[in-house]
Image (tube, rainbow, N blue to C red; front, side):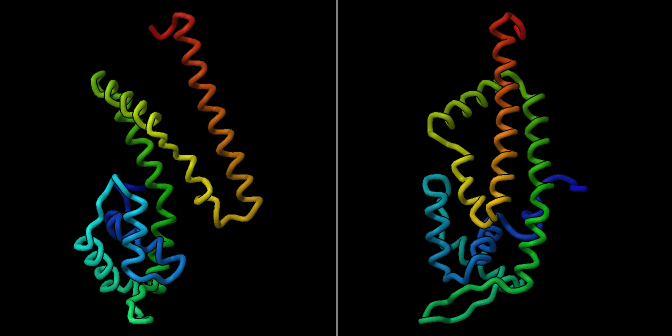
Amino acid sequence: MMTGGSLTRRVVSPLQFLMLIQLDQEPKYGYEMLKSLRAEFDGVWELKTGTFYPALRRLEARGFVETEMQEEKEFYNLTERGRELLEQLSSCMMQDYTFIDRYFTTVIKNMPSAFKDRLFELIKSMSQQGLNVYSNLPFFLARMDREKKLETLEHIRSLLRTHLETVDDLYQSIVDGGMG
């Protein structure tokens, strides 16, 4: 049972977790990783070299990554210990998501009206900015076989239908004079 918060924060920083994920695919040199993360978080998080490289060196010092010189560049590889850590962290993600879901459910149920108004404004803003978690599905599905992709998408479709039915029911209830 999780006591709250993310395991990744206790073992590695969120930045280091992103580094491990990048290195799981193939060896990379530091600046390549830094540029990729800067592009992913453009306008949201300005990742500095003074933050990036010390975090990478700490992963190396702890034996999760190793350096190899290739064409006068330091390439970083995930070690076996790093792969094991990444596997452990990945297996704990469900606990993290469950905690986050329950945390936000509790916050939303108990928040004052003024906070709910701000949350509504945030949701509207996200909608207007075109933020869409489902746009990341191609990345999520990339390493799955065809049957797993179809199973995953059918499950998501089912969940969305259920959520839409809930929204439609609430909407209709208000239109009909309920939930005053």
